[in-house]
Image (cartoon, rainbow, N blue to C red; front, side, top):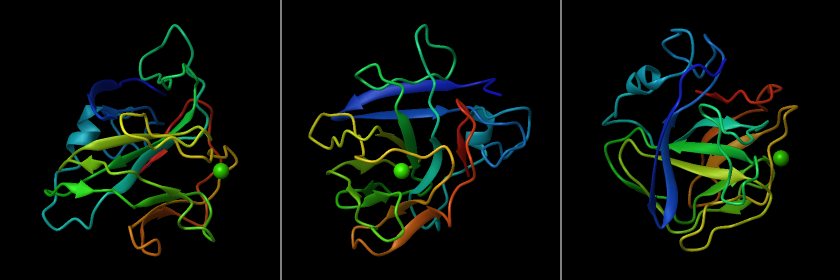
Length: 183
Ligand SMILES: [Ca+2]
């Protein structure tokens, strides 16, 4: 299960987190299939000059983190075990996400809008899917929707509000509590 995680957090107006995080061995989140998701899996995702852009690299729909925090557990700034969505930039160029969107509804691609935030080359950004809607300067990012453990649509949409840049469609599969899922 969650056998190896590393979290390196820094503040740059918003909380940006770089990590490798839990998943089932051999799962889509474990490209090297070496017994779990770890930094080796991340390093297998080299920056690509021709990569199309940011993607939803991982998400956790059934966050059961609690104190004392175990390896890879994550709580939001309120101490709540909110769902989370990790965005990864596999390209060699920084991407300005201002005006991009996250959605859990294929009929509403403009559901939650990113504030002005830059995703560095090879960088990660965590957005909590807590239902509390936070996108102000210096705040943790929180969507106003939550993730369904039974599975649902999830997509990253470009600033035109129409171009789906990455999606789990028609829906991601049912999720296990405490086990993240991703590409
Ligand atoms: Ca939802």
